[in-house]
Structures are given as C-alpha cells and as structure tokens.
Image 1: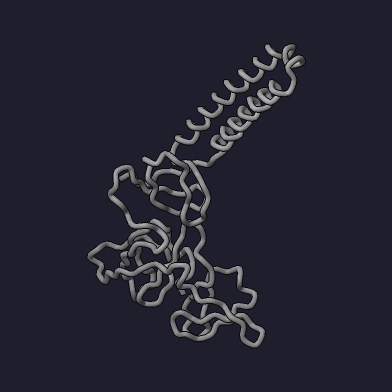
Image 2: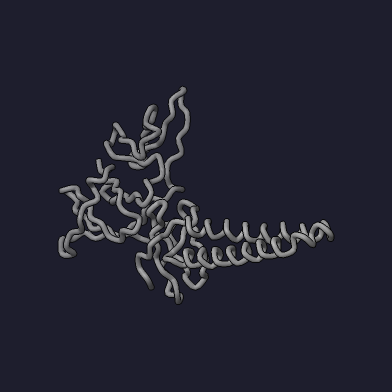
Amino acid sequence: MGDGQSENQPLLRDEEVNVSTISPIGPDELPPPYQQAGMPMVTCRVCQSMIDISGKREQHVVKCSVCHEATPIRNAPPGKKYVRCPCNCLLICKSSSQRIACPRPDCKRIINLAPSPVTPPVSTLPGMCRVICVHCQDTFLYQRLRNAPARCPHCRKVSSVGSRMALRGTIFAVLAIIFFAIALGVTLGTYNSAKVHGGGIYVAYVGAFLIAFFLATRAIYYFAMKVSTIDDPM
C-alpha cells in the first residue's frame, strides 16, 4: 500500500522508462462516506468494495481489505496532494511537485503531474509569481502589481507577500501619530473656548481621536499580518 510519506521517493532518471502523465486527486474526487447498517462506509476507489471506516474518520486514507490498496477519505494534509499511480499505488507528495516516481519495485513508473484542479495554471502575465502560503504551505499564483494582501485559494486566509504590507502598516502608523498629535494639540489649544462654545468643538475632538484610533488599528493589522514567500518569480 502506498498511503504514507515513505512513498514520496526521489525521482528516477528519465532513461529508467515508463513515464505517465496523470492528474492529482482533487477534493471533489474523494468518496463520500455513507451509513450502512449503522456503520460508516466508503467505496474503494480501486476495486469498488465497501470499506468500513468506523473509528478511522481522523485518518486521511484507509486500506481496502480486498485489494489492499489505499483510498483517501479526507483532503490531503496542508501543502500535500494525492496521486494515484496507474499501478494503483496511492502516493502523497508536495502540492508543488511536478514529477514523482512510484516506489513499487515492480512499477518504478515516473509520473508527470498535470496541474492541480485547485492550483491555477502558471501565467506569463507581468508581475505574476508563485507564492507559498504561510498558513497552509500550499502554493498559489499572486499578481504583485495589485499591491494588496494575498488570499490563499486553498485555506482562504490572508497574508502579505514580501514586506509590502509592513510598509503599508508603517504609513498608517505615521498617519495615526500625526492625527493624534493634531487632535491633542487642538484639544489643549481650544479647551477654554470649548467651555464657551460647547458641543460643536467636542464633536471635532472626538472625530479627530477616532480617526487616529482607526489609523492605529489598521497599522497594527498590517504589522501583525503573516508573510508568505515567493517560490518562483515569473
């Protein structure tokens, strides 16, 4: 059974034959579990036999007792993907892997991976780069010319690409300090007249401090944002 990390082997040389191109197993291709006589079951993706997954729902794959091959029942771990070799061996490899080798002695097939159904194809647009998500370690494409936080299509979490958001945080921090200084100066400078003129000036005080507070929270947001790394600039 090829259901573990041990089957993610180094590539073989091209001349050692048998090269295949296949697509990784996407989330939509996983067998849905269903109940049979009170037991959760899934269908083996190789021989179509029923597999009891009672007590195994926390596992990512289960082994069929008939054909002894592995079937995934959950999405691959973050940064990984499933690949089914034509010999039916189930492999788990990095999401960024483009070429792997089957470890079975009677196969040794070299597998060229088609683009993942979750990862967009490589583009030649100016400013496009491949990014490794800091949250799930999966890869996705990002357009650097947008100058905006990147949202990973896999885990849906937001991160910065490079130091751009830290620079934006610095700008917001400087603006927050400026507005706070202005608000404080106006408050101290017009305190006596505020007692005479009343409410209108107090509204200006509160507004200035609220603007300073908003800018400070945006600065903290950008400073605290985790940074994803560029894997393959294009």
